[in-house]
Image 1 (cartoon, helix red, strand yellow):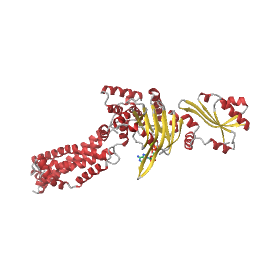
Image 2 (cartoon, rainbow over the protein chains, first blue to last red):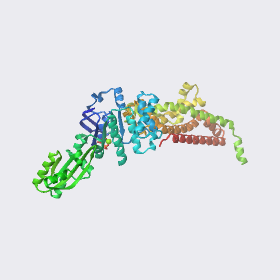
Image 3 (cartoon, chains in turn brown, green):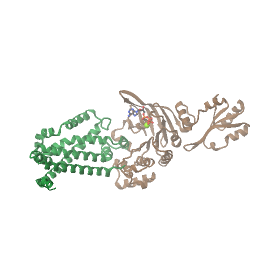
Length: 338
Length: 224
Ligand SMILES: Nc1ncnc2c1ncn2[C@@H]1O[C@H](COP(=O)(O)OP(=O)(O)OP(=O)(O)O)[C@@H](O)[C@H]1O
Ligand SMILES: [Mg+2]
């Protein structure tokens, strides 16, 4: 769907060039939800805004379905933008227009529809985002979550193939955030639409994304499947973010604090096996016992996962046998602090 | 009480009525032309301004200078300087018709600057969202920016109309007709202070009404 090839962009501040993103290379597959996460100032907004040329890159190409959008003519760019939806942190609705007219606005821009067709489409979209009763209200009369729903309906009006979300939930409370994320997932599945979203919250990535890129100081620190990146972060920045979001100390630190080096294992379950009594079975089979020191069990999008730090109550040989037993079941297991 | 009546008995109310109608005509007529010229000028100022959609340093600086030049000129001077131009345009430099060109030239830069400021207040995010939706420049301006700025534009129009009331009175100095003319001819040159008093009272009422009407309209179109 999208190939980002060597994209860079800098700003000039007080006469000095400040790089915002540098040599970004990413591929976004059709139909996936691709997350971009990073700290404030990492260049997330700059990157997502190059995808519809709200920011024009200084270098590199952006291929969408094979055509380089940076080489588009004015007309081609307008046409491309009309079929690329975007939603914003602060919604950016037209305050002087009703909810219905906000959703109608992108339809009107194309000049392709009759009034009746636009009416029907507006109804359909407001139905989708569950705002049918609010059609004649003005944005100022809506809650944040409702405003974002209008933003989503507006972004979907011209049947986009790509939806860009710039911190779409950052101005919302946790419950509303969950509702909006559910809506985005639903849209992604129903219409097979590709979604690129940026966020600084790991929970957002966990809830909706298939793949993620971690941005640090304008560069991609690492990228891959969310399950891989979140459960086995490699880059220090990713590790810090994962730790932050799970409210855990680094397990390696735990091993040295407790003086248990070599006896601590971090076991990662992925998929249905998460819900099976794996530890219990191994304990019985090998005659060892475990003490769970910390852990999480949850879901990454639809995939169940668990990550436990366990102390093996036994000798070094016991640890080896336990490791082998996990390996036999293809469960990822790592000895800490050794 | 009788003294009071006596004082006002000398006033020719028909004259005052005529003068009021003349003033209203001058204000109304010049307001229409001020909007016709000032609104596009304000839009161009806005669009060519720094970091705006059509940012263009030279064009913006030139227009800005022109606007400042006209705004810094005392209106009385403008009235006098404009006489040949006015005659060429409308055939006379006196009366209601003769007053309108200088009023328009005086008020247009003022109104354009107000328009520019009002448009700048429109949330940048709204312009970006429109761009992201594939709106052309024309669609952004007419479909998003101007409707968003409508209450502000009404307020700017009110301020301009009120400024025109006082400019119109001043144009009485060169025989522009209307209440200002009356005040000068009777109140100043013939020492009929009561005429001056009535004139000022009518002007005050006019300004009050304009302000009230303008505020109502602004309120009516504000969606927040
Ligand atoms: N219009 C601009 N002019 C100058 N510098 C800018 C501009 N926009 C962004 N920058 C700079 O570029 C860098 C990346 O900014 P960007 O907005 O992409 O970060 P971000 O990851 O979206 O951050 P945040 O989470 O705070 O929104 C920052 O150093 C920022 O200061
Ligand atoms: Mg940002």
